[in-house]
Length: 183
Image 1 (cartoon, one colour):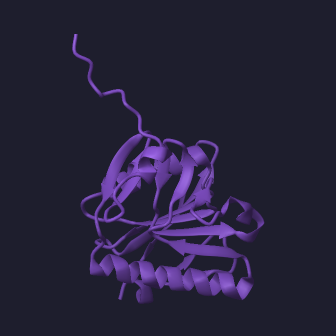
Image 2: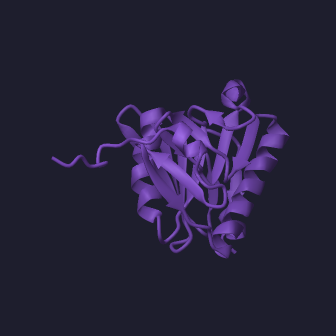
C-alpha cells in the first residue's frame, strides 16, 4: 500500500521556513499563498489604517498593525490580516515577532482571488479564537461589514456603504468617513 501525504499537517515551525519573498498563511495546518494586493486594495487599507491609528493615538487605547505581520493563533493557525488592532489592556499578546493570540479587531479587505477564504474560512477561524470584532471591506461593492463576536458566531452589526460613517461597537467614538476610504 502506498502512503500519501493527505493527512500531513504543517506547523508554525514549517511556516517559519517558507520563502520570505512570498506571503503565506497557515490555516488548520495547510499552507495558503497570499497574492500581492492591488493598488485599490492598498488605498483602502491605508485609509482604514490611518483612521484607526489616529483614533488609537488620540485615545491612547492600543496598537495598530498592517500586513504582513503574523497573528499566531496556534501551531497550525497563522494568518496575516490586512489590519490588526490590539487594545492596550491586551498588549501582552504582542511580541517582537508576532501577535500570540486573538487581536481585539481584525480587518480583511477582500481580494478577487481569495475573497472566499477571507470572508468564510477566516470568519470561522476568527470566531474559533475569539476575535471580538471583524470587519470585511469589499472593494467591489464598496462596503464594510462590521461583525461582533457572540457565543454562536459573528453577528453583523451593520453593512456600511461608501457614503456612510462607520461606527465600531468595540471602539467607542470611532467614526470613519467611508467616502474617504473608498475614494
